Image (tube, rainbow, N blue to C red; front, side, top):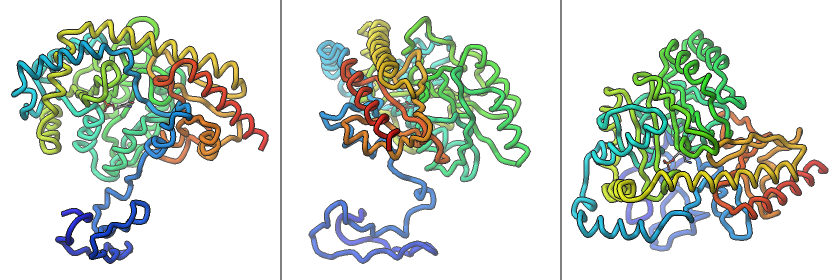
Length: 436
Ligand code: PMP
């Protein structure tokens, strides 16, 4: 049954206080998208009330017009991937193992791929067993599963201020109460975390986990310092709070070796999330979670009920990519490409926008720009789009409406020339805004 075809198979009882269901038309003609009424307005579960399109998704269509320089999206740049070689490996995979690749698979994920994931994580000091790993449909699904396992409506998730917009969407969907803890240029501030957890405990609030992106933060661009990592863990442990370490960018650092993951310092207090989206390609939608044994078992059950199993075709394609290509060298090439783009963006900000301030990321995709006093990133966005440049307003990255004094700029996708042009256009918009 869908509201879009045939007769409804159920009656709609409006919830108290909600609008009555709209009468359905019995003709075959469908009103256009913009005017279509929702016959099921009274039927939705309470938890859907917090669902809304992210500010980024709403921007997507307009920011993707070729004349707009988009500093908004977080799409990795795949131009450097050896497509012919990957096509050849994929062809061979289907020719030799096609009936496995196109079949259902294990709910926990392909065993060989789980072993290979261990190799990837070793670069960040993580020692684990293949049985600790669950393959997911991107780390986004892992976020959904963890939240589903732990959150009752009204439970608290503590998260950095600002936080990844896609995680906030999941937390909202499960009716979590997000409490933000400040970041500075060295990442999450441990003293502020301790204070917040103490205050929440005193108020009788149930904090279920700390959600953190320690490396090359989305959107803030900062990295949790080596010195703070054990302190954050100690504080979480002392308050009995699980840590969800979301780390899709950890191998994309611009200087030196990858920092040890928090998961390399603790096994029982952490659910670690990884992804092939930024180090290989997001289109296969393959990520993973590493969790303490009992949590891992529940994650598999939750994943099976959501999707039965992750895509075998995607997993085997990634597995044979890791087997047959120099993936370490590919990650190095990505790092160099993104570093050049970071340099273009930071250089252009220095040249054109001296009244603003920004973080200088040592990896990843993003810089976090604080606008000159009095400017509002959300209000300014339509004027930026008119000037053919797009960004994401800082308000997208908070659960509580803060952030209008910031914007996130991404340097991952456009060429360095386009980045410089985008920042030049943006500076013009900021300048005009200051004169309003
Ligand atoms: N976490 C963070 C911090 C991200 O930036 C993203 C993607 N932008 C994800 C999780 C989800 O990535 P994926 O599902 O592609 O693995």
